[in-house]
Length: 224
Image (cartoon, rainbow, N blue to C red; front, side, top):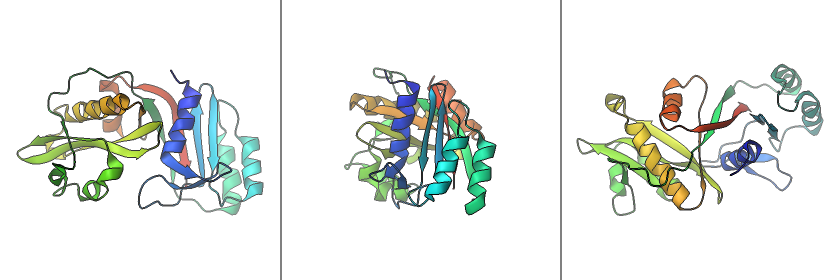
């Protein structure tokens, strides 16, 4: 079983592509937008800190001085960063890992393959277009349409990050938990770690995490 700090390192490598000196370059999914200026993944065992490859070396060095083990000084980070950069987005939230879900029953979830991926076209055209990069993908179909979906938002050879959505007219039926569990089971069957992260103000997403008994291993913070 990976430690919290190991999971956070795996998590940031799933989220972003890096150069040879471990600086972030782009988001690890099409259209490969520029990564945030700084990523901090805080765990009880310490923090994983990554900088954008274009961040000034002097500012990065000053950042290292204000980021403390276990309890990052966010006020200090913002103060240092604001000297040379304008940033308008600060997001943070819990990062979870799935327990072993292999063998759990998923009554309504259907796996989407090349044979039936036309199901995605009406309401999930982006997933349809990027289908090969979103595997595995599971859906729940009601009234002949896809009403809930979970697929891999980003992935590496070690882990996948979940992306889940349920149509608002079909919420409250436990579809999101069902389809997400099916996705995680397949990811684990393929020998990778199933990860799930969200923001602190996304209460619906956190509710899914509780229903699935996910294990929080840390909190991630993005500044861009």
